[in-house]
Amino acid sequence: MDFQNRPRLTISLSNLDKKIEILSKLFLGILWAITLVAFFNLPDIIPTHFNAKGEVDDYGSKLTLFILPVIATLLYLLLTLINKYPHVFKYPTTITSQNAEQQYTFATKMLRYVKLAIILIFSGITLFTFLTSKGIANGLGWWFLPLCFCLLYLPIVVAIYFSVRKKSNEKVV
Image 1 (cartoon, one colour):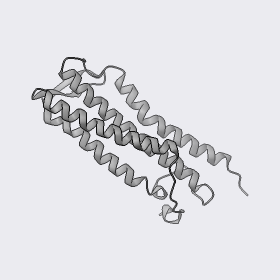
Image 2 (spheres, helix red, strand yellow):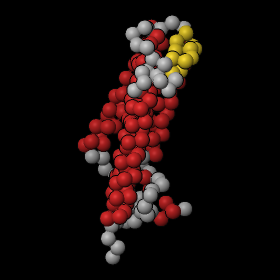
Image 3 (cartoon, rainbow, N blue to C red):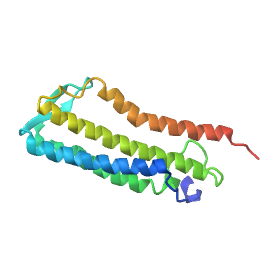
Image 4 (cartoon, helix red, strand yellow):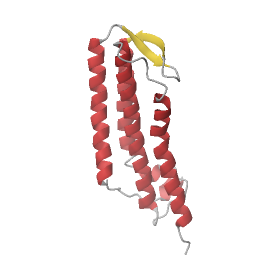
């Protein structure tokens, strides 16, 4: 496999990376707090699904509140683990000893942003489930789905852009 010949580097975290990691942990804690508060303050039947317009289209047991925090926690742990091995990622450019650090940095930043985005999205869904169940909100709103797409795909597009841009700017000696 291609990644077996790639340099294995430890990428140091920038101040922004450290802040994103802290925010991810903070919002994961907030997600769990919202879930627990909601669980003990909601009726047995709550909204469990929203359509593309953000409107409630299914109801079910309040036990389903725990699905998103469990998935978010597992994804957080998995993405944190995977981020320690950027040499195994798939890249749009050939990884060399000259560009490895920069490519790995872009890739690990992207995963960090995606990890935070997933936690924010799941927190939003859980919060709006709680608010809708309490009659304070009426679903997620039309804006929620486009926001989710931006939060998830913008970091990926930016990382790919910078990765490819660096490739075209490299000088062949």
